[in-house]
Image (tube, rainbow, N blue to C red; front, side, top):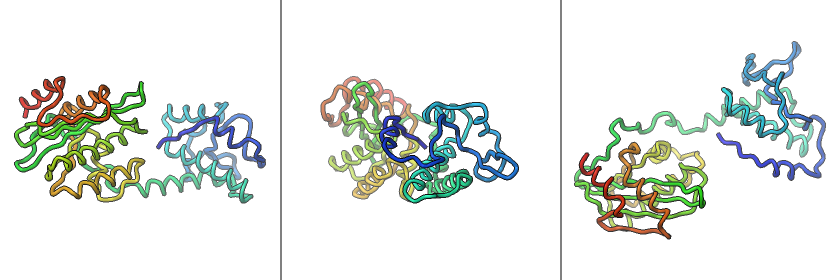
Length: 299
């Protein structure tokens, strides 16, 4: 779970708005505690005494990002921390718009309930899905099938990214290869999902109807093979890829290690030097010949 913060936005949104008592203090202290008749109970949300959150007794923070950095760099539950932060923010809004809001003593409980709800809607096979192959070399598809390997590369220096796709037949011969330069997405998984769509598009455009799509991003392959809707940030891209693939007569998504995806990886890196996209029919760019021939010798 990611928490994206801009301190300038926090200051701007709270400026010139009335502050209710109990909302803001001086320094920032984590609120992983509830008050009870016998004193302060540090809670993981279940009511159990949990000393891991008691650092508030001896550490103070000047701003929220400093607190967040401490949580993420220590052995704490980042998910629970995120839910605590969200619950505090939610209560603050309730106090401002529909006072009095729920009691401070319920923050831990409500945060833990929100965490359980979040976990309950995650894909059921999140921990299963396709396994990573122990043999990571490229292997040809069965007779009658084609295999489209795809990969993405990120060019952080100019905010761009590369897409690489290579389609081969059962003899390992290249049918087509592609390098495309596109706008950088927000995550590597999103980039890989976009690359999957481009690989399916290319297969349809060139008339390859029975195709195995092979990539090295485990999370994306798991999502593509999961019949349940993906709740990930790139879920709509996964849905688009799955719907596009229904136009094929036969389709399979499978994972391969990076060593078995070198040609597609090199094509993605080559996209740095491409304007728009380039397609090579029955060939690969000259600089990809070595890795392509290595695949042929091992298959």
